[in-house]
Image 1 (cartoon, one colour):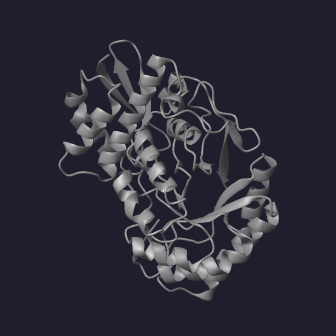
Image 2: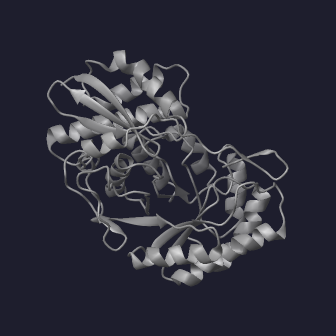
Length: 372
């Protein structure tokens, strides 16, 4: 079997689907979405196209090693996202060729169903509570919320802390004690503010706090983790097994969130999960992306012993011929071959995009640049 063509399909709202074609008629799909940088990822894949043509897509690890190591300047989100999308597509081809789901090729499934959490939001605490109640009514027993706004100063006012508590309290009152509530802090906080807000949230027992600080300084993340009883989660901006090593060695997180579309693909995330297992750290793959990304995550979740819960923002409606259907906040493990999905080509054509979406440019009240 040989690779004969690579098709790149940017689609709304901000996703990039990769289609690999072969001389045996087996086609594989992956997702190489890197929010705000789709044209750059597409250029990276096109740069590799001459090297990939004619290769056997079933030699997944061999091709992965070549793409990563032959670059000389290794890593970075653009290179790793491009590799991730191609790697997923090669796994999809291999599973389809063998007639088995990917989890069967990665050791077999270790669970029968996969727990999901739903994003919940609102401009006010009351709106947040209402959305939380809707999530529970839809069958979810886990949600994720934001409690802080962009533009927080390194050391900010009591109003900021009380605002975070107000939103957390409203969500907890809305859903009760039997629903888990993750809190995404988006890497917006300094260690001092993260610790202060975490302590204020502790009485409401958050499921985890995600990215309380940015991951570039692992010691800062470890400082926060040691200062709160709330489990710390991180990983959406970390790449490959090497990017997660220090986090584990310094016990800076209780939950890892690698993204199979950024971190190097499905197998690389399985390697990260195995590393995490040795430190008694759980896995909650990052996936605020498209349905192909979710399919890749679900294959990983099915065969990963230390998997905890799965993020999602779509179940594939308007993209897949057979969208996923959650049952009480869970998805059954699929036994369909490859990634287990069929794309709705007509629907995708209607959602064709130029990949020009980019992150909002935000500024603090004094005009200084601040994080999204």
